[in-house]
Every structure is written in structure tokens, then in C-alpha cells.
Image 1 (cartoon, helix red, strand yellow):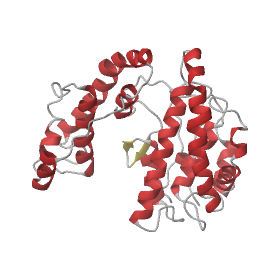
Image 2: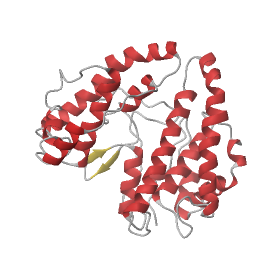
Image 3: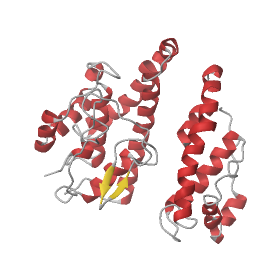
Image 4: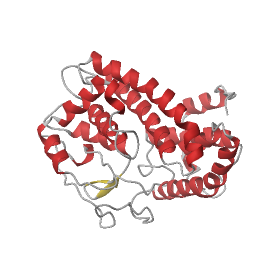
Length: 311
């Protein structure tokens, strides 16, 4: 939801910005807020744990305020249960003091656990997934992971969770700082991916062509050159020389996905030999190699991280 709002807010093309406004305000925002409101109702004013605060409640409080600031609109009318979340957060004395005195920005720019891979019945080979089933996630997006019968979502968070749960290999950093750096670069990489996806799936070919230089000539070279230097420094891994982290799996999967036929051409990464080496090293792991050799082939170039059981 935040990405939809910021994507609209910082859009430079006034016509594109205008086209984004109504779908965002009528569909996207109400959809997400209704889901979050339901969660807050079930947890009696909290998002994740019943009657217990987590970092997610603090994060929501800050981001929701930011979104309303961008929209210059009060979104609180139809989400009474969700609005209990910031009330609980701001009951913390130190949080309230900071909130009341915070600087206001004036924006100048508008196992591994053991699990089995499954394909939903509505997602056969060579098909586009149906995103109209309300019981498949709060965002109607894949992938979905079940842990003890409970659905979980969000690619990066799932990968991070699986990295923590890996019993045969250490896929996390050695300390909190190293893990924070890994998270930082994964989020940075994902921001790049979202921009590429937005460009790639634009229906208006002329508008897409206008963005070609911004994506192919500026965004991708800027980001990929940084990741290339990171991979060069660590001999094909991004964060350590001695072993991969969960982020190496994530990067390798997304890079492999981006160079597929529905995004960039197959040779786009040829000028980034160490990123190629990253993919090769991850694909060279025995069970990854076996899965890649036998993975389903269809119109969607699936990442393997979520379906792979480390040995």
C-alpha cells in the first residue's frame, strides 16, 4: 500500500499520476486497510498478537501517518479497530514524547524447516494465477507458505525466516549489524525490482518506451554495478566469502527471474560476471541444481528459494 501511494506521489508524468490516483484511492488503499482493520479487530487493537504490541504496530503507526501526509487525506473513518493501534503505541510515554516533538519533514519532491512445494489447484502449468480468491493471502499475491497450518506471505520475510530455520547451514549474518546490512541491501534490491516490474508490465507501449532509458540506462546499471562490486569482493557471494546467506538465494532467484523472457534479454547480465558467478554458485548447490533441472516450466519464471529444502 505504501509503495502504491509513494509511486503515485513521486510520479513525474502528470497524466500517469492522474491515472494512478483513482485506482489507488478507491481500490488499493481501502483493500489493504480493510484487511488490516480485520486483523486489528481480531487482536483487540494490535496487528499481530492479541493484546500485545510488536514492532509491526510501531511500524504501522509511523507509515500510516506518512501516507496520510502524502495524500493530505484523513483515512481513519472506516477503520476504527485499526486506529486503536496508534493509540496503543502512543500510550508509551517515551513514544508519545517523541511523537509530539518529532521533526516534520517538508517534502520537496512529489532444515531448514521441512516442507513440500505445492502448486495451487487454480495455478496449473502454463497459466496465469487467479488473484480473485480472498482466502489466499491478504494481498492476493504469491508465494504463500504454510507453517503449522498458518498462512504466511511476503517473499523477503519468508526467505529470511527460512534462513533462520536452516538446520544444516548458517544462512544468517554473524551478528545483528551484519543482519541489518543484509536486510538493507535486500530491500534496496527489491525497490529496484519493483521499478523494473512496473516498467515491464506497462500496457501502453509508448509510455513504456519513454521509460526505457530510465530503467535500462540508469536504474539497472546504477544498482547492478554496486552489487557486482559486492560480489567481486566476496568471490561470487554478496556478503561473505566463506558461505552464502539467505540473501544470496534471494538475489540469485530474482536475477535469474529478471533476465527471463518477460523482463530483460538473456544476455543482459553478461557485463556483470560476478553476478553471473553468484547465480552459478547458488545453482551449483546439489539440491538447487536438482530442483532447477526439474522445476515446472510455464509463463512464470518461478524463484526456487521457497521450494528448496537445503541439505
